[in-house]
Length: 306
Ligand SMILES: [Zn+2]
Image: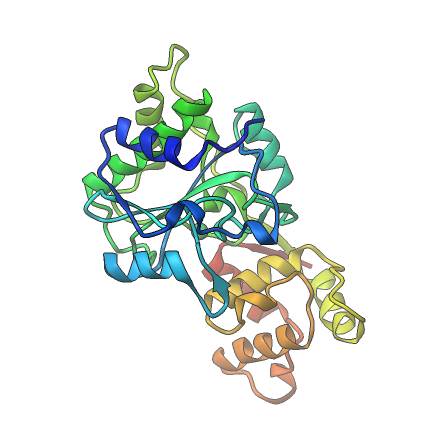
């Protein structure tokens, strides 16, 4: 449990780790605090931005986009290793994640698989978006990786946290893949953070590879058949979030409809996925079938049971 450090302390902590920090305008007061709480803080979350070029990355992370208002993080870590401060306070970077993961971060123990999306991460994590296309091919320069190590270390040092307080977005929210790409070795980053922190205890043990989230086809079909007729947006099956995150990543569903409710918009988006696979007519009615769901799971890292 820790109160977020004041903005000047955040800046000073980053500079004290030897980082080159670029202050983007009124970053200390740019936040989403009117939408919810910021703090207590428990850890640091690292992302890739899915953007091209530092200027565009900074602009998008500062201002957000039509589906998601900015700021989208606190610091943007550019490919040249500079850290651009775009906001401070509550920021739209972490979304809803797994309460068991949060408990593990607080306790600084190994993380369980993330299979729930129910806990407000924007409240509890410092966020760094790293300039990268996120396609698994875009390489991570050494200077950028070093900046990740130093930025995470800066926050941990201030709060007295260890390297286990630093997690990836993919550790937090089912369906997320960030950060990834050649040159990004997370176990190595954790070791380097621990070393910079002067850990007297051994570096954290490698984390088990998170189990893939599992989506139950019959539960999903039940949700797809019942949810459009329900009033409001109740969530009847948690696995819907995993499928919606995949549809968002496919560009078929606007992020604001990724709400765990398999409503009309999600049915329409799923039908578009079925058509993309070549299905037509009744076979593209937006109610998931085994083959189309398997294909979506293969592409977005979830398993299917029925
Ligand atoms: Zn992310």
